[in-house]
Image (tube, rainbow, N blue to C red):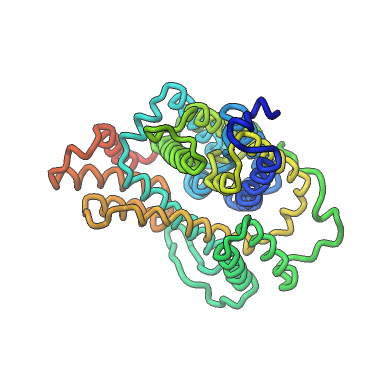
Amino acid sequence: MLKFFKLNEHNTNLRTEIIAGVTTFMTMAYIIFVNPEILGDAGMPEGAVMTATILTAGFTTIIMALLTNYPFAMASGMGLNAFFAYTVAAQYDWQTALGAVFLSGIVFGVLALTGLIHFIDAAVPATLKRAVAAGIGLFIAFIGLNNGEIINFYNGDNGGIELAENLTASAPLLTLIGLLITALLMARRIKGAILLGILLTTIVGFFMGVRDFPTGWDDIFGMPASLGPIALQLDFAAILTIPFFVIFSFIFVDVFDTMGTLLGTGARAGFLDDKGRLPKVNRAMLADAIGTTGGALLGTSTVTTYVESTAGISVGGRTGLTSIVTGILFLLTLFLAPMAGLVPSSATAPALIIVGVLMVGAVAKIDFEDFTEAFPAFLTIIFMPFAYSIADGIAFGFIAYPVVKLVAGKTREVHWLVYLLAVISLIHFFYPAG
């Protein structure tokens, strides 16, 4: 083990790697409860989704370790799961959405193996990448507020948004309590603050009568739910009926989320070379593609590398052994499946809001003094929650960016690929049925 993971070469040891793996797991394990909640809104059975989420996170994190020897962990991505549930599955169905995820994973793998992913990364302006992250953050927070019944969102012809009439009702009150608990844990920089927030809020919910107290160990420990209802349920035929822009949006968000996370965590660990590049990045991207395609087959949304990996890196994790530990811990949680029934929406809603806070921070790096940067960024950010669609937000940004640059005489700042993406975005609006 010492030789395989080259612990001595990375100035680390077994104890440090184990502690790092546990730390990373604690900071991202909230996805075990949050992902089933989100995909459940798409009509998928939450127990089965929980099993798929755990298996995918566990095995793909181990695959990442074996392919790269990096301390990076993977799981179903926040934002991408929201796009899956509230945009694609809401317009079509979750079987079609799984097919779209599978296809996007195949394309992602081809881009990674051919190196084209680096070309795309260099062509797309940083402003739009940051705006997409911030917009998704607002979208996720919006969903959290709605799921926690703090606001009421009515979609459809007679839709609207309003503050809940009675914030002292059990569901919104528990959400607010959970939000306060999680915020305090985050402010104190407690490891695994979001997961602890979910668990503590669930306990408070017992006393408030939102959920019944567990009556025995069978309510906490047990066999995982069957994957039967969701595994291999992809509707490939229906993929031909959905717009290309749906597939593109999955790929777009996954590419830049993963690339940004890999470079950020790689920099934190000291892995980047003199030119700021991450060695073996194509292998890391391939692990992402394997996770996404495999996850779709099992029945979960797009898999991506988690920025929470920096938590393990911060305590000394430097090799794939950290990821092996994280992956094993995920797999062990399969036997906590009955616990999912104890966790109310009001306990996971604060987690969504807090994740939204973290993601919207990307807006700080956008140059709002330059209107040609600010305007497309603003449209991208604002249309995601207001249009209730991540894809529409991305499309508005890609249309606005080259237009304002062209009018301002800054055509040299726009790569030809961005013009092409603007045309694709226009087609998305004018021919939404694909």
